[in-house]
Image (cartoon, rainbow, N blue to C red; front, top):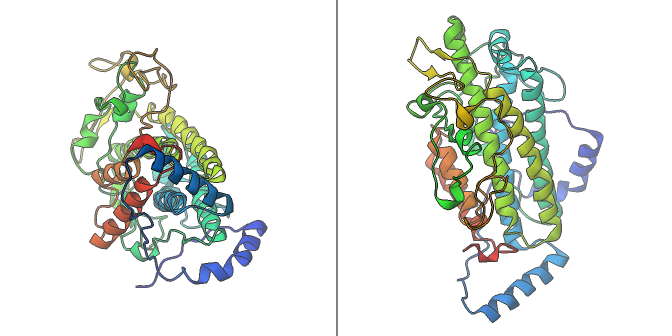
Length: 387
């Protein structure tokens, strides 16, 4: 199957970077051969562990360690997946310009999104562009250090929306049958619960976890009933924040495992942009109007009214509520959560799979993604004690 290339504007600096890395890139453009670098057993003796850590850091002075490369490769793959879903949102509901090419916009869907905020199309556009730059940069950095980049092009097989404005190309992600987890809403408003302690938090919109719902119009038939279309836009609003809160946690979780100080700098520089995205989308999701979708019975409640309301659901409380951190004996602290490093990459894959984002993908896709996650979770660095 031919791979589908998503067009985007390339700056002069990008063109220069492509020329500089062309020789290295040719060897990896056509296939995506996952390599597992960490096959050695874990040695328990503390003196051996210290020597091993020193050796890895010495190796890192001259180039990336295999573990650092595995972490970067997994993050590049995650950013490719994010870009794919954001591209679909932008084609139908974002600003259409030369910075993010593809699609022609859907006025009805865009208008429904603007009910959540008048600048939604601009924010969608900018979030899409950001994700493009993240995977472009990380892959270029891997190639510059002689490492294999992430490439998921062979898995662009899922169908596009048939609604006016969308490109008819293969996709990596499915935005038309989502099960949206909205527990992030109550988690970031809780002063006593954190998933790092094994806690669970209630759903802000319980119905979104009880079925499969579109976050983009599947065809022009979804545009005919305004309440149904608004339900689709509301679903998107909560899905935006769900995706970005995942990235907000993933970068600090994996940063604890890197060895190379420059790789640490990359993760600590990209991660906060994910938090900026999450903060924006959390604010906009709170503006989703209460309604009941006449086509499937999905209910979007008024989060400021009983049985909701209070600090747990109050829509204008978008700063992270201070909560427990590291040990319950310490005072509560305003933090990103979760940031537990053990199993963070595999946890992200399992979470996204559970939400239906990859519904319809092949077994090979899941095998590749699982392999990337396991390699990233096997890496050791500053967060060596995570296992």
